Image (cartoon, rainbow, N blue to C red; front, side):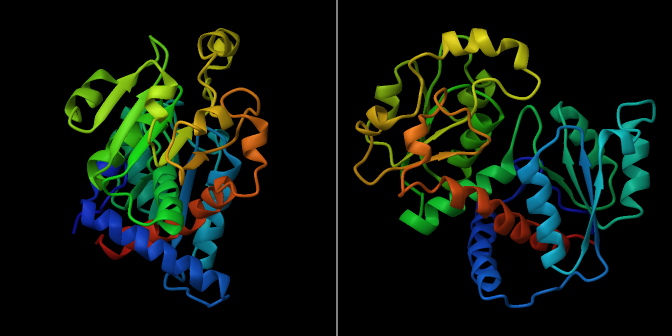
Length: 303
């Protein structure tokens, strides 16, 4: 049996995604009860980080430990990825020694090449194009607080980045409407929008995008690797902040999210981050539970 990979949300069927989200909620309850569940004793996850991240490392490493396995952290200094050895060779060798691999890197084509030559499941823990693991956590959080997201309206405010791209895929897979508000020149990939034109709309006016939305989401305006553009982006994204004023246009019961880390006072107001009813901290925690469910699925459905 060939390994199942998770490079984008489109790698799984909608029913499989919903099953993982339901399983994530079950695993969360079990963990809160301190129920011991270790089906993967002796299993090893290789964690390849070309982009650093606190939340990604802690959630995957903790999750693998809770499932009874071990996670091996590999920094850019620890691998030959992109430093002479072909990606194909690295994939063949590493996958012969571990049971599942998580990769956090820059170009999406790099993880696609790696997965093509890996004999074990490969998980996209973030590329410049997609961030599907974060979407699992976001949707899990919405379901826990508001129920099924099918038929709802989601508003994305800000850069048409990897998170935005994954929200487009989520709208397709989980059947909700997505309104994207971004400045000119910062739109998500045109082909991705066109392929999902029946449920995705790109707007300039954040208030129009937020109108009636059941979920509002944002992310930093300058992602990792774009730090030299930060001052320019702050000017061009003026008016695209997720704040209390914008929430007034949304549904009365709307939630708001941020994948973190946040630049308070830029893409999201500090007051929203500190509201007692925010779900942002649960959203962050749910990376742990959603990824455990994903790892369980991939290991159980791969040879």
